Amino acid sequence: MTDTVDNILTEARRAIVKRERLAAQLRQADLEISNLTQRYRNEAKVWITSPVMLRHAVEARIGKKLAA
Image 1 (cartoon, rainbow, N blue to C red):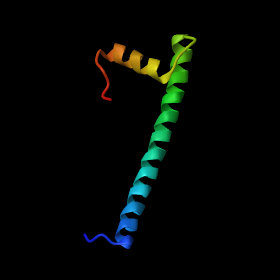
Image 2 (cartoon, rainbow, N blue to C red; image 1 turned 30 degrees about the horizontal axis):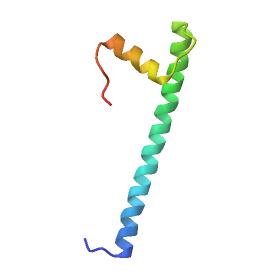
Image 3 (tube, rainbow, N blue to C red; image 1 turned 135 degrees about the horizontal axis):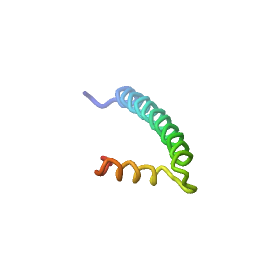
């Protein structure tokens, strides 16, 4: 494809739309993890819990590291 201003802007538009869609999915996943962290805190009766601690609990229960 020949680089023209219009082509570059069209590609940029696609990339921006893709990034915004992925950012929305990430925000939704963060909310889900936050809710699960709260539920874990209540059920496990622990005072301090973060998503990182929830991840460690998952890895300890499953016995392997989660993919990064």
